[in-house]
Figure: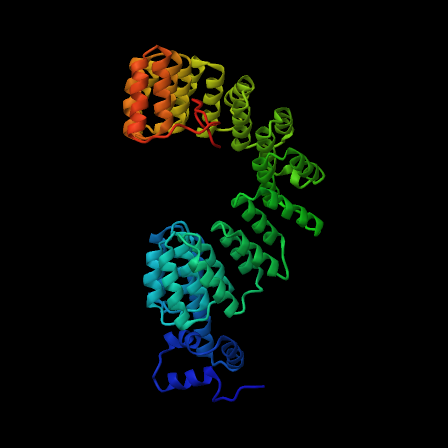
Length: 519
C-alpha cells in the first residue's frame, strides 16, 4: 500500500524546512532519528524520484561526507585518530548519525586500541541508540572484565530496548567473570521470557556458562532441550564435562557425537584427547588417532598432534609419542615443549635433552620458559649439574627469559640432589622473587638426604616462617636428626608436633623432593 503525502516523512521534513524550523544541514540526520527505517527507505525512494537540482546536490554532498568519514575508520589505529574523526563528525553535523556513531562506539569497545570510557561519554551524548550500540557497549565492558558495569548497562537497556540474542550471548559470556552462577540463572529466565531459548548461539553459551560454574547437570539439561544442535553445541558439552572432571562422561558424549553423524573438528578432538589424558585411556586415544589419520584436513592441524603427544607421554607410550612428533610436518614451540617435558617426566632425560639441544642448535623455534623448564627437569633426573647451570644461565643471557619460581625450584632440586647444598641455599637467598614453601621443602629434603643438619636447621627455620604447621616438614626434620643419631632432637620435634597438634601424614602418603612441574 502506498504512502500519502501527509504520511511521508520526507514530505513532513520538507515542510519543516520550508517553514525554517529545520536547516538543510540537519535534513538527513532528522530523517534517521525520527522515523522507522522501513518506512523511511520507502519514502526516500519516492522522494528521490522528484528531487530538485538543489536537493540532488544536497544528497550527493551528504553521501560524500558520509563515505569520507567512514573511510577514515579503515586506517584508524589509535584513540588520537579516533578523536580526530569524532571532531570531523561534529563539525560536519554527523555527530548524531546512527551508522557513523556506531562505528565510533564499536572502535572504542572492540579494538585493542579503544577506550570503553570514551565510548560511555560518546554513548551518553547520543539522542538515539539502537540495539547494536547497546550490545556493543555491553560487549566492550565484558572485554575489559568490567562485568558489573555491563550488568548495569543491561538494566538501563531494558528501559529503552528489548534485549536480543546478541545481548544474551554477550551477557552469558560476561557472567563467567562474576563469582556466582546467580546472574547466569537470571539470564536463563530472561532468555526463555524473550523467546531466545531456541537460538543455538544463546544455548551454546549457556551450556558453556553452566559448565564453567561446575553445574554440569544444568548444562546437560540445556543441551538436551536443544532441538537443532550443531558441532559447537557438542564441543561445549564435551568440554564442560572435562572442565568438571567427568572424563568418562566426556568420552561417552564424544561417542554419541560420532554416532549421530557429526564430523569432529580441531576443538572436539583436542578436548576429547585431554579427557583420554586425564583418564589414562590410551586405547580410546588410539581410536581417535586412527580417525585423525583418515582425515587429510586434520592431519595438518598442529594442535591435535600436540594433544596426541601429550596424551601418549602421560599414558606412558613414549615411543608412540616420539613417532607422532617425528611424523609432524609442521611444529610449533608447544610441540617441542610437550615432547621434552613428557620425556623428562618419564625419566628419559637423555632423549629429552637431545630434543632440546636439537631445538637450540638448529634454531627451529624460539624456546620459552616451559622449554627450559623441561630441560632443567631432565638435568635433575640425570644429575647433570653443569648442563643445568648452563641452561639456567642461557635463559636470561641469550633469550631474555626471566626465571620464575619453577625454574628456581628445578635448580634447587638439581643442586640439592647432587650435594651442592650451599650453592642451592645461596641461590634461594639471591632469588629476585619470594621463595615458597615447596622450594624450601625441596632443599630440606636434600639436607636430610646428605645429612647436613646445620644447613637443614636454617632451612627449617625459613620453612616455618612460610608454612608453620605443615606435617611433612616436621617429619623431614625428625628423619634428618635420626639419620645422624640425634635422638633427643627427634623427641623434641615430636613434642612440638604434639604441642601444635600437627598430625602425621596418613599411611600411604609420602614426601618426594622432586619439584612438581605442570605444563
